[in-house]
Image (cartoon, rainbow, N blue to C red; front, side):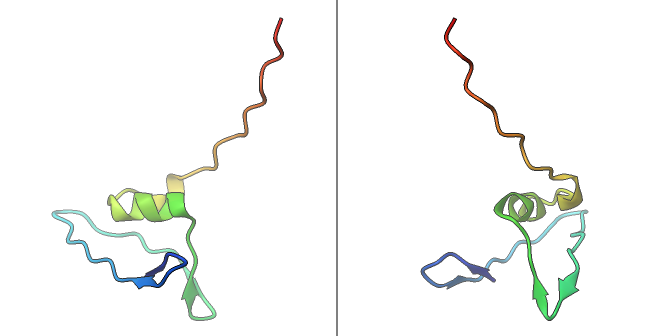
Length: 61
């Protein structure tokens, strides 16, 4: 289930020949970032998701 700020969304996906690697549950809640959820939903290892470094604008030269 995903909270999208307007309500709960129930997501179901069947994987062929793959398996989910689930995040840990703490205090009865599984917390994942949007990028981690996208990786999990695609059947990828969400543990390999890293935040992208912020890019500073280049000075006009």
